Length: 370
Ligand code: GN1
Ligand code: MG
Image (tube, rainbow, N blue to C red; front, side):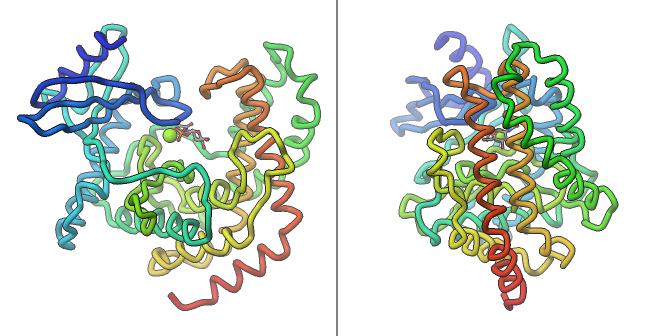
């Protein structure tokens, strides 16, 4: 593996002496490695990823999107005189031939980024201060991209957060039941069916055009945010494959899903899976403090609903993948996807239980000046 990796890495515009490369990170989709180089006596690291071309059928379009948005962010940070701008966005390192990717012998697609040092990721928010920082980081990211010039970004995964389409995929997986797993997931399947109308209603509002299309990240879970080591600030948002046109509600929804949860997404002790209203208030307050200038009422009034929506779509996707035989998400154990679906369902149930107070908190936060 190392030999293959070295061969690929050597095709990127990196100078110095290669020392080593090791696997990195916890993503469910791409394979990630970090390499270490000796650049004239200075140790320097780079991040390399094999793009999952099942999840992203057009990696060239993904890279085109990423290059455009990161260049735009860099330019804005430079204009604003931000001294540490190279830490505040991923930056693509092109191949020696100028392309944004390298193809391997098997047709796989690889990319390289500068390795961002002095940052850390968190699986869960530990305090409302951290929750607020996460909200600010995503709000800032959206604000930086609100004026991206040029043509519309590629829809690199069409219908990514479209509940109607996700239910169609679920129906198909259930009907085929290729692994004969449906019987063992009876109550989860029942839950998804019972809640279909609710999930589809929100996406219909979006399709009706009441909500503006904006550039959003679409995968703003807590561990895709990079914080400084002192944990006083969210430095940037990473994992940019899914940045494409959509609604800001998807991003704030995924933030709520992952920041308010007091347990990991695959925790099997469901008594630990709880929605934290204090973290909810903090993450939304942080988010609104950055986005208040451009967000419209039709968007902000759906923020809480978006949290429930994205949690539902994750439960549905995990369950669908379980029924299909774990063809999409990386798993570490046979029932991993079922565990994830159960966990997300538990979180939705807790949100439902606390819905009245969630509504009050959101109303109060929207009425505040920022
Ligand atoms: C995947 O790539 P990663 O692990 O950040 C998935 C997201 C899900 C997430 C659930 C392209 O994100 O949609 O929210 O897992 N990304 C893709 O943890 O499907
Ligand atoms: Mg991702």
